[in-house]
Amino acid sequence: MADVRLDLDDMVAHLPGVRAELTAEATKRAALVRAAAAPHVKTGRFLGSIKVTHGKLDAFVTIDDPDAAVKNYGGVNHRTGKYQDGIHAIEKGLA
Image (tube, rainbow, N blue to C red; front, side, top):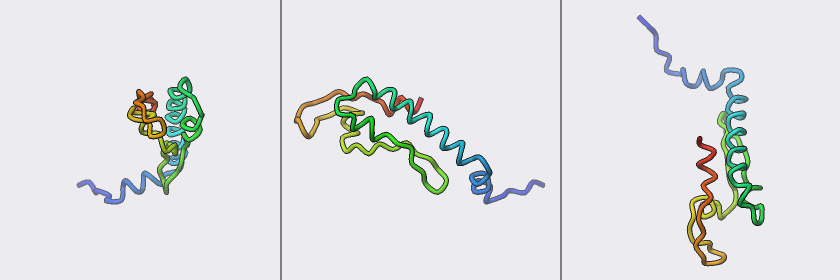
């Protein structure tokens, strides 16, 4: 009969090369988001805030621009009060 390891997910997550592979994947996806955002640069704040960050094991694409949601999805710009269409750069990083 087969044994089931209850810690298998933890064991695999700590294998050599897993963190490097996760970082490589996040870096690739961040590049896709940057490429989608680049044609829409006005101040550079959104584009400059796209970074790869790390948790204990994971790697994440983060965007620190406070207006990221409006710029990406569209909505009312709180500075101008005008509606702006979204650029949907985040979705490009999911492809």
